Image (tube, rainbow, N blue to C red; front, side, top):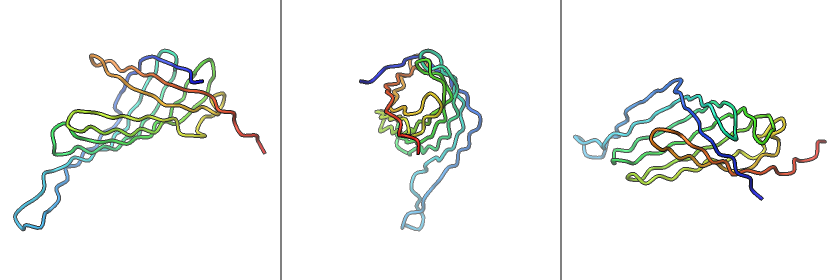
Length: 147
């Protein structure tokens, strides 16, 4: 049965790089609309049921279509959850299609360390009036026997 952890987090950009990309078409005097490729490194601080910090490595692409973009990221979290200390990885995949967004964050299987060993689950993020909220739906799988 899944457990739920809720709280807030703050994000601080450590570094950002953006590159504008244009692709030549088959017509000699024409180019496709540009896309922007970005790479960011972010720091997060979690409060609430998940108490800790994380580092996020993110790659993104902005489409020439208004409100359309995508990103992928890996996030290394060091935290206390349900009184257990350890670390784990989150994998992000986000797409925005003309303003409609889909976001998936999953705990990378087997990434839990310390007392968070065996952690499984997924996270949702909501942004309300520039405040970031998370909901982590999680459980602890039986860790494999040590050999």
